[in-house]
Image 1: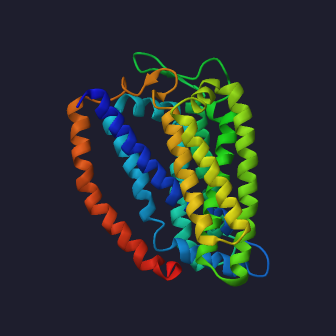
Image 2: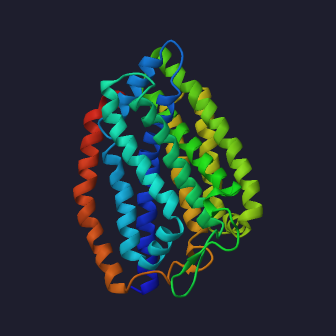
Image 3: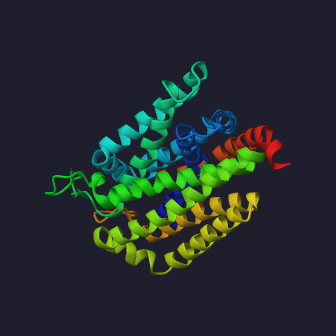
Length: 333
């Protein structure tokens, strides 16, 4: 197998890990948002439902983030180094948010309600996806440059790339998407009036996500025109079209109270759209200076990682299946 093929396979593995983290960890972030925004006569029940849904699995979901990080710094060390330098502030703030969120989720049990650790949990759940989305926007728009010697610069603009309108739009879109995922997941896991509470939140988050996606597309035409062209070219646009179709199907299912279908379509939508992004961004790890192939490690390293993946998956996937089967079976029966 050629070096290029090995590099693309490793990139595909990292993308698969990112999709898994978005579907599982992203919904956890969204659960924190709804915990912070719990309201009405059943706000205590809403918080309990969120904690009950997240409690058994929230920590395990971070295994996919760790997998993505390890794959990137092992298989694409030059690109990983540049990402860590160019996005030093947002990535470290994201990690701080994840740590605060984890601590708050535990400590909040000793003080119920929206104050104290409960508020920290909710705010951290907002900060982390916004910063991750903003980092994505900065990379996609070519917000920083990498010299052949590996020196990272952000150009003459005084505003950090991840604070520009397009990047912040991507951050808000990521937050809204996480909130939508959490709402449709919680619709499946609740019953009665509580289910209706989360159904209304799913409708609100879905509408917000659609509006933000349109705004981000307009901003991208100005700040990331190359990315828009890639999205509208083969092989990306058919994948993106399927993702949009799934989004529409999920929205219809929520309105018509087909709860399991809405959950499946929402998860499929996020997975397919991330796949479309990967196909559009396939030539670059960091646009425009760090190509995917140029940033790849030697073939021996890539081959070792690919041979190691099945061993790791044999250990991780059955464990994850058992965890979800044990704690989620009651909601799927």
